Length: 270
Image (tube, rainbow, N blue to C red; front, side, top):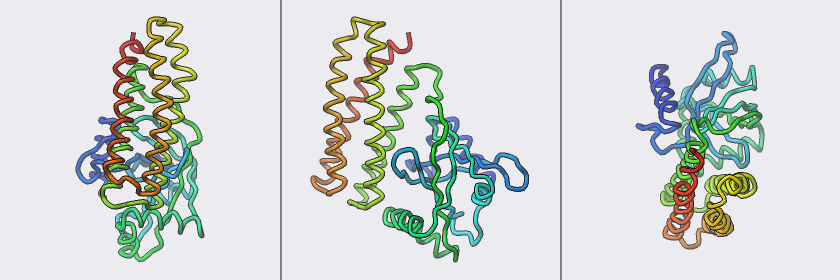
């Protein structure tokens, strides 16, 4: 990609909280900022990524099939401290170039999910480096209010669930990477709900006693959602139920997110 094209994507990404159109529409995308190995100046590029469970994502130095490693890869080899922008938040990460069996297993997962990675490697004539980016320091969502922050978090889950549905529908089936994508999203949703039930809801209950019946319903829904999440993981893992079951489970998850926003954003933004 040219510098001008990259800058257009970066500008659109930042203006739309991580959403871009064109060739990247509906894709998992982050902005990676490295430190120039020679210049020492910050260098930002948009990159597709793969979830890798917990607080780690993976990027592949494909450079569109170029025979040379991209500049950002050389930069992070020289300095492993990088910055990642997700559209929801910006965080500091440590880059690790995967080697040996770990590299090959992650790349095989990527190829199973999207054969384009194999095409890039063949075209480039080189072994494409695979890099893990592990979160080291990050803050809350970059929002102007608590209500907006909640909406941003929920929208990030909605986006990821939509991608998982698309991958399942496209025939990724029960591939290893799809299972990890689902596991990562489901684990993130569980942590989010634990924080709400353990921290946000008690604080809101103290401030707005009249909200307690709604908070009780949301707590009960969190228990139900935990079961739905387990069902979604099982469907994706085993392929049982097919796309109709994935649709049903995702619809129920999204209905909970919508109800929670309708009830909580007005009071969060008081």
